[in-house]
Image 1: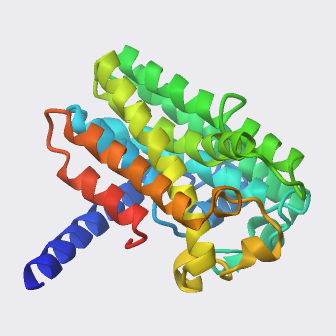
Image 2: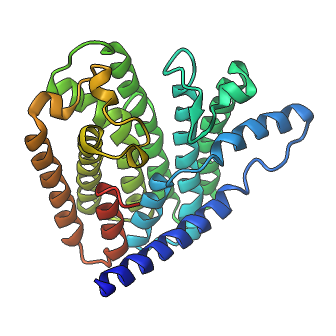
Image 3: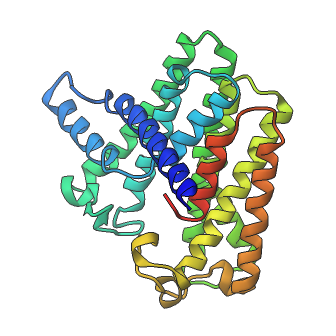
Length: 304
């Protein structure tokens, strides 16, 4: 028990250190402006960007890149771009035309704090800045082709080939009972696409082979689905403090979930199978996967 506690403490310390290193770089952006207008815009961008969170997508990208020999200095701009894209999507998701949420991570949402128009523009600016940062990093990279491939992967999965089409599908199926194919489509795209891009873009930055990139894509696909299934299970059985929303809210809102479609036990088995397949694929690669494996295990058991 003491050995396990020491192991967990050691990992958590390392995770905290890695997260801090990433945020030190992330917070170097948008610190000034060339006019009052740009400074005001930067303030609203920073407000949401610095609101907190686990930083899972950038950490997945950095660790995936490191797995294949890419330095953190090379991967940090792409990890930052990933977090900017994720943050812009949250700003827009919270808008009255979408989810109409007033709180995000315990703080007033961007549109509540700054007004709807400025929130929209802050999100737009974060998205555009993400692409500028990746393009600039690609031009400065010693491995330009790898960097450009990673940029294309992230851009594609953030747009009509991933996150946005998933959001469109989610909106189209609001207040209606979905089949399993539709539910998978929404979750693979709306949530899973950026997770996939994180793993795959990191591998591309490190110059991974096509076979290795394919493995990382499958790993990320499984993680995205498994994470959502576990989230659905925790809504039934979990602690509100862990899941970040009132337990039972899915059933209350008549939301289609994996347990509502395939049952609680089948959902547990599906999540377990997907997780094990991801870890087996990760361990099949001849690299030091210890940190990434533990990060995945803790994420999927909600111990982060």
